[in-house]
Amino acid sequence: MSFGRSVRRMGARLHLGRVPLVAVVSAPRSGSTLLIRILDSHSELAAPCEIGVPTVFPKGDEKYPLVVEKWKQICDYYEVDPGRSERDPYVLFRAILEREGKRVLVLKDPRASLYIGSLDRYDPRYVHLVRDARSVASSRMFSDPANGFERWRTYHRSVLAFDTHGRGPFRIRHEDLIANPEREMRALLASLGLPFEDAMLEFGRFEHADDRMRLWSGRSPAESPLQRDLGHSIRRSDAPIWPDSVLSLYARLPEVRELNESFGYR
Figure 1 (tube, rainbow, N blue to C red):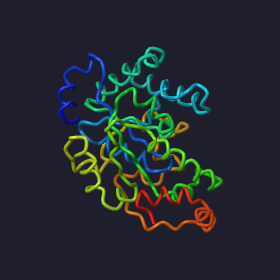
Figure 2: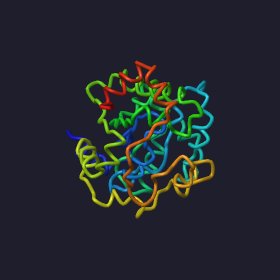
Figure 3: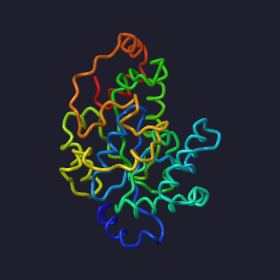
């Protein structure tokens, strides 16, 4: 049975248990916020915000308190008891789908890519988003490009090492999404058995719960200094110009270069 058909069959009985899930896995600064905003504009997909599921993260992870804090904010918005939903995340999952009037929930938190084995207990379909390692390392998020390269390598190695039992992820490159969004979204949705909808590419026409929850340090995503491409639609960008410091370091990181080239970057 295709994912799309299973979605339609499950749509009438969401209250009975599991719900159809898609998980976007990626390194930080790869365009995952833009991707879920596009997906959230589909009539069957709910991708309201970055959702880090506390049960996926070990309590020793330094980001675990932040994951729990945001989980509570999301629960408050959807009027769900945080304790109950932390024990059974499907409580929140179902509440989101009911309020958004959608059939499929999209989970996205780049850090979950490090714990994909725990994420897999929720049986999602995976979308593996990649971006050129040099662009990631050039992000203002990283004061040291070496940290950006290392996190990029670690996150993608974690995804590639995980055995998805024949349910290999659909891979999409951020650069291809920017250059030809309709082609890339058609391919992604076809892999999920869902129809493409033209309006998705004008995601600014839709309301997104993330703008009201303000999970980005009290801001909406578009107000964050880390976001430049969350206007009303996808903006085409020029070829990246990487700093000499990034290029020099990249030349000395053969493992990063090899993995980057395996994704088609030269």
